[in-house]
Length: 393
Ligand SMILES: [Zn+2]
Ligand SMILES: [Zn+2]
Image (tube, rainbow, N blue to C red; front, side):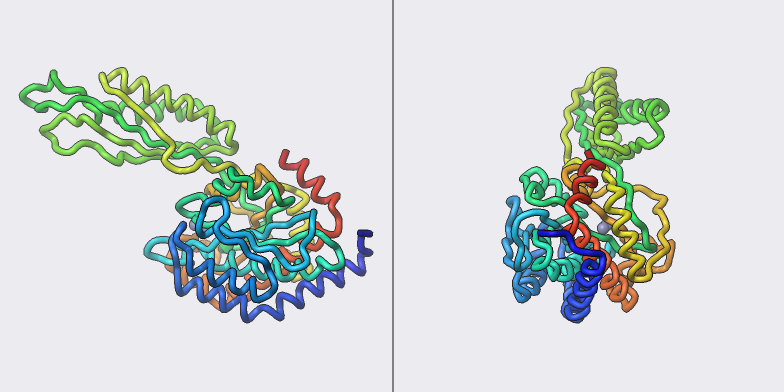
């Protein structure tokens, strides 16, 4: 297909905005339904049923249960054919106790609305648009599994936005490996026969000291933090089993892996010093850092200006998310949109309330339009995707 003139492109974006306005009530009803019926990661059955029924009613063809997960789905927009193929990522898992305190109900709503908007351009531009439902961001890392199962090899870019206390163009994310160490010693009477004991708690203490010594000789982006999950049972019994859980994070997967190998040496050393044995496993899926595509960011920024959003503020803190794993496979964008006063972090009661507020409604529809317009740009000019691909290589 021939590429559209600037005037035609502007018309396609205006049509996408109209499509979102037309769907606004349904989209917001969906956001509120998810908010009122929070489900934990991996169990988001009612949420997925609600999201996909809205998409089906608008002509999407839906496959639920992809990548071996009941609550993962791919919903293709009507009129989709061939490449480029855009994935709007939906999250919909809540947190134990405080419901949608990370605002994932708004991620689902904005990605659904953005896909409705962008797909209005398919008859003119060709290509494909889908909503990809990714379960359990908080507790499973559903996207990690979906990357491993090759779900994203069918797509050329992934777009989503996360609610927050500010508008930002991107969120730098750290790669993360979650390790669980089990030290095994020999129990004994701690007073009557201490010489018979091999103290697995001593092993943990020395291990922690080893990590603290290592802390001084790693790059400043490295984070190592952990807890003693099992530390023995009674003071008069030499602990024969202890468990230490920790995260190693850094700005790249490669750096995390390198630090992990040194952490494993510290665990071996601690076990050797105390006459214990140690084994370890990764007890959560490893998360990758966010690879940032300048091209996608500049597109988002210029489309945001169309909607009157012109001020962006970087985030100071760094977390980790399974969207990082997607960003190493295809160009991915996850800006944040403001739904709450500055300084209110996610995972709080106040953030949970904000995720159902009038301010959230307005911001969700706005960010959906920005993501839709960004999608229209990508469908119109596949050269942009080529550039974005080279940026994440
Ligand atoms: Zn969260
Ligand atoms: Zn979140």
